[in-house]
Length: 345
Ligand code: SF4
Image (tube, rainbow, N blue to C red):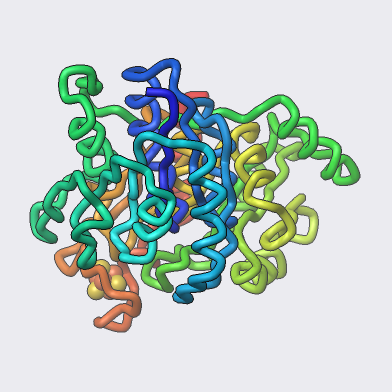
């Protein structure tokens, strides 16, 4: 085996969960090049996976077929003579390129009507007894070579940051005297919706407490452009002397990964950045509301989860059906502050 292509999932958290599959394949086929075809959005995750030889960015528009572009990309991939492709998303579209590229073995879940496009497959797991995502992806490696496939118990994702990525971040943020050892990263966003977002007033109060405890502490608010406004509100509510910086939307994901890997601790909601912190083994507090930490926990022994497990939770709704959002409002800044002090570095 000398050429394996992975078609990556499109969500950051899911992409992080695929790393144990890559590690298992590298262990089984140490000589093989493992390349990843990924959207621009998740490509940085794979640049932080040491098993990956090349990350090929696919610049497709969301929900567009873009047949011509897919055919062109398939032609380029065909020249690389991959022997196997793992198609990790379930969509029909994601299975087209490996088929057009004539990759002989195309492995994945049956997904959306992909008979023929995928030629070695597993049944889609039932929604009720769905396994954790790491195991879901790892199960596919057993289709290729069950004897060599990894049998490690509870494998957890691991990402690495290159020295170049660290240096680039230190240079970029030189003007704010960025000191990673005294920096807390807060991730106030969650794409899913408000039932996964800890209140902004709580984030602001926690920032004030951290700066009161340690006057050298810096707080960096990280997230995407969509989180910029709520991060501004946190800054406005924090004390004027809190060294709090709103970098939501001002960093690339490559930079965000490096920042998370270097900082003292991360405080986040149940989000993709939470999984990145876990995979980098950064001490973290993960705050859960309407979702279930048993299904998507941060897989790290340096993570502490705060979840109230109310009778109404997990409800998995995007808007609180009871109108009070107590699952998040009642997790108080003091509790997060106390938990942060117990984290191992
Ligand atoms: S119903 Fe309960 S778990 Fe769901 S959002 Fe409201 S408070 Fe949270």
